[in-house]
Length: 195
Image (cartoon, rainbow, N blue to C red; front, side):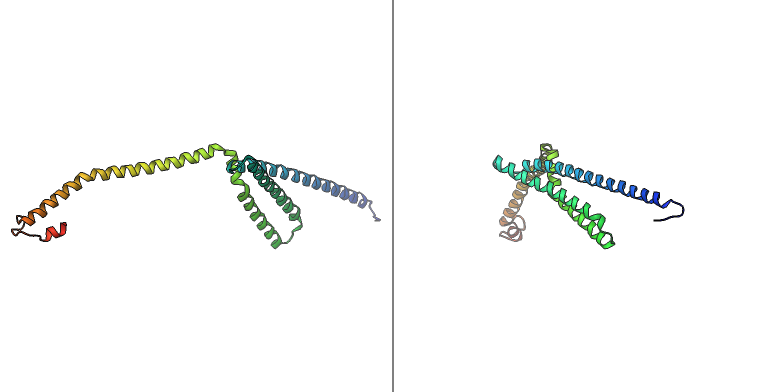
């Protein structure tokens, strides 16, 4: 391209050099993204394996293979999901497409949490979390049992009062039958009410 001042050629060379540097930087970032995502997916898979292994019952072989298959599925799902989104995100330029992409990202994140996070927490906390949960449950049951026992003891304490009232009412009924209560012998209102 002919120029009068001779500055266009160096500027074009500088732009080409900057574009090459930027392209190399993006390529390095893509490698870093893939490596980082793979490491995080592997870590999630390991803890998912540990969580699934602790929760499953059965023969050791069945538990091992079930835990491995589930944890591999979680790892691959996490890796593929995030790499897929990160590869497509720069190419979605309109506002609606970006909103849909973020919606998919949110839904996928919730699915990943549902798939593995509870199992990861269970694996990280291990038996201590289960023991703490059991301790809280036993505390609640003990409190309820103490309350029921207190109510039973209180009810037993009422028994002498109930027997005393019963004997009083029986004496009143006998007195009415004999005629000493109302002056007339027979079964009147008190006897009918009490019987």
